[in-house]
Image (tube, rainbow, N blue to C red; front, side):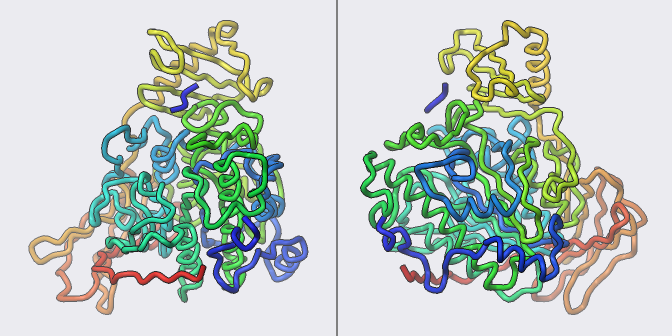
Length: 551
């Protein structure tokens, strides 16, 4: 294997007026009576995507956890769609988040590994995130919490504001995210200086509630990327209900971190209800990889990986199986066992936002699995840790391949094969007994590792020679017709209609640069029989953020 509180204290930092969400059977029934049909989703819903940090598949009660209580997540699972076969993009942070944001597995994505003694890896101008897609189609967007990509500088291609988020508040690099009482956080392009006394997850929850409550007619995407329950095991006060457990201090506080995560989820759902936005919102909850064993935490105490082998950093199931819950008042409660992966999020969110899905992604939309209508199935799933380990799943078969001298492998490396239908714990290597399947999967794995296959997609603007040059790239798989480019604003400028822009091609039009004010490019077009409007605005300077704390 590769391994590289009293109740008052437990709720410390919870702001006044917030309580556990009333996601009870009676509440769900009342919501259904108010007009939302069970099994359906609202058109262009708000999206609340909650990403836990190092939360194992087995660390919530809905997946069998017995030592740590997660009543709010369990309730969401009982009232929503619980995916029992959900996978992260990678068994560790940065590559997993890259996969989730961009719709590519780590055989194709920009960031395929965590930094090892070097600078934090970064996204590039070639990357298209789900936030950029939804922002183009009229969503207001925010990333609150842990971004996980460098460098720690504003106005560079890897910054969240450049990658589709109107607002960012949190940590840029993942090393900084290890500090639960940080000396500073980032708000958009500015550092917000702190005194080291404020608990970052509380500040994130507070800002997320403010974003949900903002007065706007636009649908929203809120990517709430908490750093709970990543090591170190830090929690305000004592470990609450776990303070007197016969465990190590690290394990007691880890349990309290998971409980705190559960109450944060409750606070966000309550905010949706209080703002009257719950019926129009889809909540998605998942984790970036399997459970950690860092700074004294022992995941086997909690059975954090459930029945699966290994944990964080491993491409065995315990390192990449994660919880995934989808909740919206209109959904019919059900358990879904069809495999889905983090790289399915981008096409799913594009599908929900009625935005043309980019071509040549590794992900598939699982929107139909939310409503019970069915969705396309993957022919195979791939995980790639360069120079360390790889894995591929095709149906019931899972192949794991280690690089030379990794995890006890010899100079030629090592290949293992498992039948997950009979051996979900990956305890019996049958590669020698199934040589044909082993060869097929090794070849398919090799064929799945390569360059980024995506096409340029979206609106680009360039200021040159007194003009704003607007370029529309069709990076989807279908033609865009009746295309009209222009500039939005009080004096809206529109170009002549272009009959057709085919996949993989682009059109550019220049406009006189406005003398002042905000510049917003606009594209109107038809795709697959549906009208679309894309907008892309230049961002100006942002005012400093003032932080307050009630806990």
